[in-house]
Length: 159
Image (cartoon, rainbow, N blue to C red; front, side, top):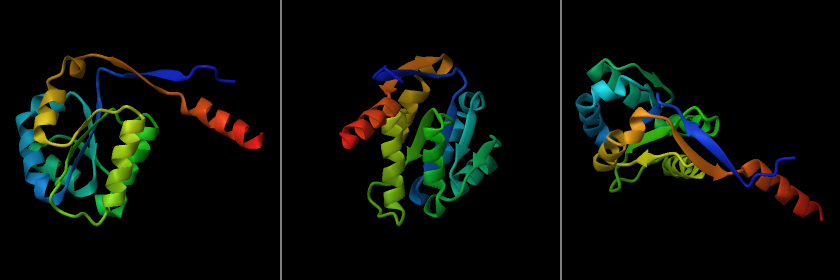
């Protein structure tokens, strides 16, 4: 039986960074990746399909590509967060354009919040995160022990 209400998770020195951008923001993300290529090269990069391919072509950085966002890529990234395989999300989103896969985007952002994953949704927040002292060292953070929470809910439902 698990007794702790919270768990301490560690983000390693080498980060697993997801790169995502809506179509109208892809060029801006690519420019940001070019400007930060030296730092990004020290980490493992992944991203949704088109974004990953475009960043790799423009920067020569290796970026593992998942499906395009509208074809499930956002959900694949979310699943990697749940598995503990993504530490940071850089998502240049377009707040002024409707997206056909908006529910997937919201699910990705929600799961990143659940697992206390840093999210940058524009260049300024990405700059702040990338220049943080935590980019070069391990970082411990505390999250709710959802296993215990689920066990308690199941027990309460039986009562």
